[in-house]
Image 1 (cartoon, rainbow, N blue to C red):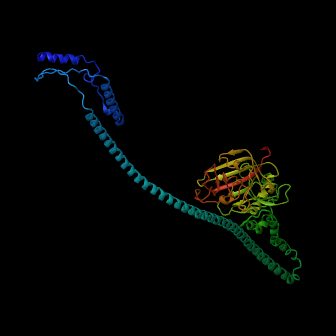
Image 2: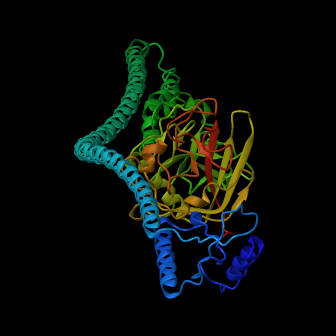
Image 3: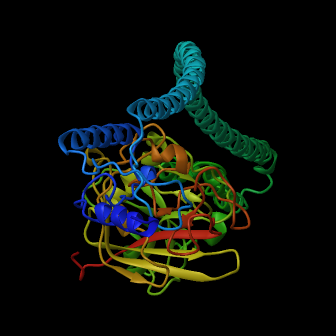
Amino acid sequence: MDLPAATLLLLILCAQLPKGEAGSKEPQEFDSSEVPEAEFLMTTRNRRATMADQTAQQPDKCSYTFIVPQQKVTGAICVNSKEPEVVLENRVNKQELELLNGELHKQKRQIETLQQLVEVDGGIVNEVKLLRKESRNMNSRVTQLYMQLLHEIIRKRDNALELSQLENRLLNHTSEMLQLTTRYKDLEHKYHHLAALANNQSALIAQLEEQCHRPPPLVPPRPLPQPRPRPQPEQQPPPINNPYQPPTYSRNNQITNEIQSDQNQKVPSPLPTMPSGTHSPSTTNNPSGPFKDCLHALEDGHTASGMYLVKPENANRLMQVWCDQRHDPGGWTVIQRRMDGSVNFFRNWETYKQGFGNIDGEYWLGLENIYWLTSQGNYKLLVTLEDWSGRKVFAEYASFRVDSEAEFYKLRVGRYHGNAGDSLTWHNGKQFTTLDRDHDVYTGNCAHYQKGGWWYNACAHSNLNGVWYRGGHYRSRYQDGVYWAEFRGGAYSLKKVVMMIRPNPDMFH
């Protein structure tokens, strides 16, 4: 058999081997990168074990031995792909060792990383401990500071209470000093007036003494002229009686409202000249009186504005009032007036009750007098206001009265009419409040902040008895000026304010 025939025989034998054998088995592709290392090792071992089992089970198909001469191979030959098991095992062990070494290196690096993290965490733990210790120290320090601050607040509050008490005492003493000062001025004026009357009386006595000494030598030669000198003493009794007329006016001065300043001296001043006007006893300067109110005086023919003597019905008291007979339709009784800031209106309860001021200037008629006047019937209230630019407005209320002192002179006002705005209805039904009598609804004393006496609510929309500030606009810690909130606001002190009442029998609100 020649070489081509032998080669063909080997190819035929190899072709007759069944599929799936080691020599003809088709290789499978396996990507180890997609499988973890542990799974890769297990897969490799399983494949090797499977291949060994198949080799053991299958008989050797190429069991024939051919002796072929050594010649150059030019075609395909059947090559046995089996390797010795020792070589394969050594190769597998090397791969496993390399994988294990790589895994050990990875774990070593992870351990080093964990050690570094542990070292860092240990430092953080120490820092946290230090921070906790500092926090405890800070908490104790903050607690200590809080207690100190609390003690300081309590101490300052006590000091503030003491200061407020001292301030109230100072204000009370100041008001008392002002009252004593006004009374001293009144007494001083009365003293000067009485001194002038005493001088007049002494002069009249001296004249009478001279007249008494002159007649004796004139009696023998002139018996007839004696009747003529007698009229002279009859003409002089007016000066003699003149000093006795002040008691009649002093009776008028014994009124329940204690009008201060120069008013008690201005009333007696016309008395020395009164005898010259005896021919007109019904003039308004010397009204007959007393009248029920100013409307009664107007109806009695007294059409001039001025001071009148008034005695309300069912009241056992006389009072001097200013009657405004010019303001249409006349018959207005002035109960309050502000015009020049000459009178202090920051007074106590008793002073507001009795009244104070100058009748022909700034004055307050007195709560008790207002009560007796308004208890006679239905009265209406007119409030006239004037600012520092000359603008004049008014507010009229259809009814007005105050209750008795048992009700703390509670205010009652009716329907509003006017162009000044309604700043009094908010005070309707409120009791009167002064520095020493707090009857308002505010937690503090509104009279202390508003510097006056008024029917305060909490506190005021109007404060006509406040501080008179020159120029209108004022700066104060509180709104304590003479203001009407609906007219120029609470930070504007008005120039002139007048409150007056008049009977209004047709209105019953």
